[in-house]
Image (tube, rainbow, N blue to C red):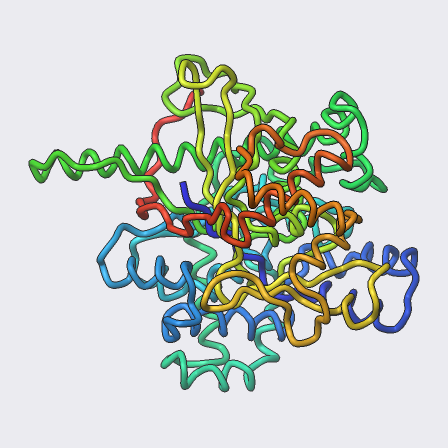
Length: 464
């Protein structure tokens, strides 16, 4: 199952937080600012609107810059493959990014945006809280589209490339699309399952497996719900393909659905972190299972994941606004596996995406650098950065570069089998894991980089 994870465009809170940091505001001052009610479910800023529109143009009109997400969108629009599923969080900045950025796909009429509350941002700021649902449990648009209506000049600049009306036309489009949003099944609309305030991923990772499991329990149950929904959508796509093949009198082949998720950088970091530890389990509701009880499934990290995904799994790197990360999820159940597991593999940045490095210990030039995915594949430093992708990842994880090179050399010579050295406990095991990632990055174990066939968004029946 191929996942194309898109971070939302810049929000009003992102903009003001960035300005506060630039002015030298303290952490406490920023926290007080972020708690202001005006930031509840913060909408896209003017720049965020422009980013979503630029994403739209790139996906449809610039094949070389659209990457795999662009190929999936164009393939569906051209009728050459089934449409991908589209999931967003319940926060308006993610919904609006999906509606604006993926409009050509949605206008084709073959897929709809579905909102999954489990994808809600996991932070304590007001912008991580959704606005209440409207009548009939419908997601309503923000009460003010000021960010959009004040951006008529930006929309006008985009109109030539997009070939459509600008300004209020986009506002009217968003209002109409909100009436067609589908809200997937959920335990709670306002999902606040997250790490306790003040806890850091790097700190809880240093503890025992038991203490780690206890600290991240809210996240593992949330990630389990996300995986359950993805598997249900994949199963629905397979059923739909089988029915279509039967009606056509053809044998048909199994189809693994691709899903576009438009959500948040923090949730992406936590999802990748849980897999990267390779010692945690999440409760997953398996489609067509005999029991309706969730199955504990081990979350595993494969050697085909690129080094930039290791950086995204920590607290020192963040995906840029409207950046795209690709990865595959594969399940293994009994009797094929002694312990049921979900493996995350083939993770990499899509073309044009980058990672903004956030490490206070770095020099000024490196701190504001960025890892960027080039059209030819792989990650390179952006123009502002002074270090290489490997060096940035090492600095972010405080790994001894000399030891890493030593283990990388051994890896290149002997081609270690990754499961023997999967990151588990403490600094040494993470070092072995990073060495293996370095080997993969330099070709010793190159990822396939290929995507799964794209399926439909039909959903199978669920346990009640």
